Length: 419
Image (cartoon, rainbow, N blue to C red; front, side, top):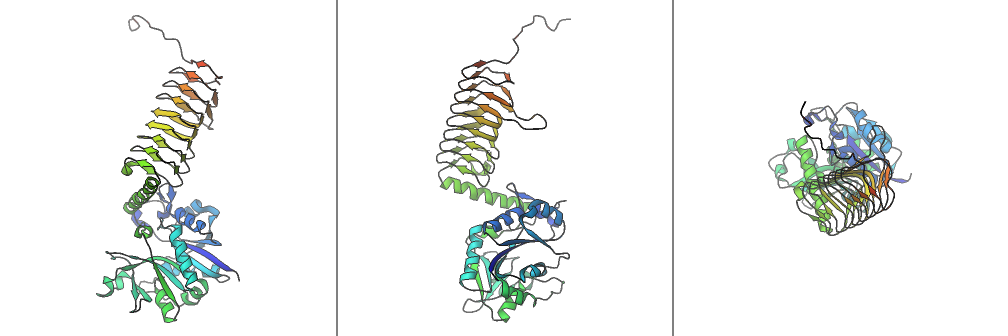
């Protein structure tokens, strides 16, 4: 048998604390479903196979993940050990490693999981636990070691005594197993008094078999935080926002107010760009150097802004490219648009890109000046060096080097309100 790397995503638990009609794991964190984030991490590991354990409201999980993963159903919710037992038939023909992840622990990083897998492989451990050191370990399973530092068991909070309750090394629930040792040991797990089978009990079972157990302490405790309710969901959003904003600031971007700036993942921003307060930049956007964004700007997905571009106050940009030095200073919407170099978009101008059925494109050439309160009704092309008079509604293509005026002549009527 070839050596495999299998990822198992636990996604079968109940989620009553969310107080929602939806499965907890399909709630979104920074634009992505919780379970989708975990599967995305597994995909980055280049696993041979990803298996998701589903239970109640499984159809919602499947709708989100589709064919990105294989599915195994836990028909009765009888604990994490029981959940992993449902995967055993999928593992019996395999050897190598299996890493256990959780659909409600969404900001664990590829680098951390990769280090766990490497440790498990290089040290030839039967199981490697991801642990953390916490000054407030209440609620977590404690890692019990012997006098020489070897891991002996995990003691759940409810089972702690005066001594074990003081242990500050806690269990994250994330493990990497040698598949063959897992299969040999998981059958030893027995239900607790409440009828549930705890995966944590496998550590003591492996120790009883004299198998090698290891533990790796996570460098950043926030990676192992879980989501049980909407309060924790919001907390993880703040943590993720700060991590992303910090990364950009360290890379040379000025963010004037990190508390009100929301930059999603997979965004590239060049050096010396300034992000003003109350700005949101969605995923898959690229912003060049020396740009100025905001305040109160909304840069939606799939935008590409070249160097020295200005997107000003209360502007929305969607699926648009803006070339070098162009400006959309304030109160404008540019959607499905190509804007050339040296263009100025006047206040209150919009692209009318949707006809009620389909989206259409607007192209604006280099060195154009679009007057305030202009409507560009797509599909439409504006040539180079064009001046569009304020208040115009442009429905036809405008050739190069043209003044375009599309509005009625002003008429002043005397005594218009007298009968």
